[in-house]
Image (cartoon, rainbow, N blue to C red; front, side):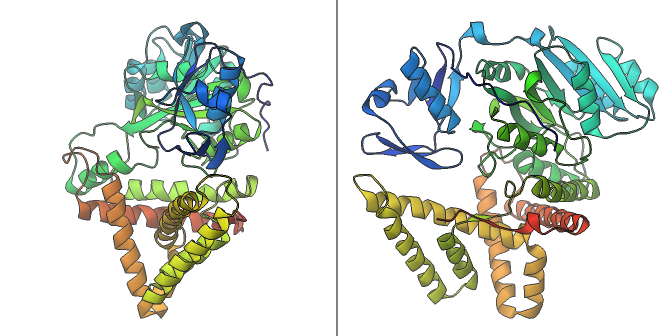
Length: 482
C-alpha cells in the first residue's frame, strides 16, 4: 500500500474560526448529551463547554477552551466550519490545477475557459491522447503540458501533475467537469484548519444539449441521483458514514498530505483508496457542497450502464486493500435480525421485528447515562431500524441482486417480496430526491426504472469484481458488535 504522511500533531484551530452544529445532531438533558456525528456517537459536554455554544449551535474559537471544543465537534463530524479568519485562508495563487485528459479536446477547452484567474499554475497531463496536437493546442495558452506517450490511466496522470506542482495546494479536475463561479473559495477556506488534507466540492449535473427521449430520462435521473453527487449537506469524510468517500473528478488537496498521490495500479476507485489512506494517516477530509463543480454525465444507455458497472468493480480491490472499510452493509446483531424478519414479509415476522427492536431498546436504555434513558433508547433504536430497512432494501436490489434473482426463480413468496421491495424502495428514493424542479427531475415511473437499472449495473460490477479478484470481501456485511 502507498503510504501518505501522517497528519499534523498540532491542530489548533485559528482564532475567529466558527463552527455550527450539524443539522442531524440532537441533544438531551438540556444539551449535556449530544448524539450524531460521523460515524454516529454520543458525546457528553461539561457545563463550561455547553456555555461556549450559542443557542443556535454556533461556536467561535477565541481561547484555548473554545478551540478544544470546536476541534472535538469538528473531528466527530458533529459540527462543520461556517466562517474562518481571512488571514489564515490560502488564496488562488497557492493552487495548481492538474487536469488529466485523454482525447477530450472540447471538454478540456471548456474546463480551461472556466478556471479563475490568479492560480499558481495549470498543468495538463495528456495521458496518451491520439490527438496530441489538439490537446497541446488547447492547453498552450496558460497551461503547462506533460505527456504520456501511452495511456497509463488517470491515477498516473494525476500523479505526474502532482509531482510537477510546487504550490501548497493542488486541485485535480477531470476534463469532463466545469467549475462553477465561486467554486474555489469555499474549499480554500477549509484549509485554514491545519489538519485538513483534502476538500471536495459538490458534483452537480452540467446542463445537457438536445437529447433523445431515453437519453433525456437518464440525464434527468443523473441530475438528482448521480453517483458523484454527495448531497446538499457538508460533512466530514469518514469510512462507513454518510459521506464515506469523495470522487476525484474534482478535489483539492494539501500537497504535503498526499505523498506520491494515487495508487496508479488502480484504474477504478483510486480516489476512494486515497481517501481511506489519508483517513488512516490522521488527516481530516471534508466535503463542502457550497463549492459546486458541474459534471458532463454520460446519458446514452450503454455508456451510462457500463459506467455504473465500472464503479461496482472497484469494491473488490478496495475491500482487499482496506478490509471492513467499504462493506455492503453494516449491521448489529439486533438489526440483522430485524432485516431478516422484514424480508419474511408476514404479519408474525413484522411483529417479531417490533419485538426485537423493543428488546434492543430496553437493553440500550440500561446502558445510557441520561435522564430519560427509555425515550432516548427508543429514538436511537427507531433510527437504527429505519437505517436497517434501507440497507436491507439496498441489499435486495443492489448488492445481492443475483441472490434475489435466484430466490425468485425458486419461490413465489420471494418473487412477491423482491417485487414489493423494488417498488417500495424506488418510490421512497424518488420522494427523497423530489426537491428539484419538475422539469429537471424524472417522473416517478422514469425514476423507478432508472434507479433499478442503476442498482443492477452496480451489483453486476460488484460481483464481477469479486469473481475477478477471487474474493468475497466486498460482499461480506460488517457487524458492529452491539
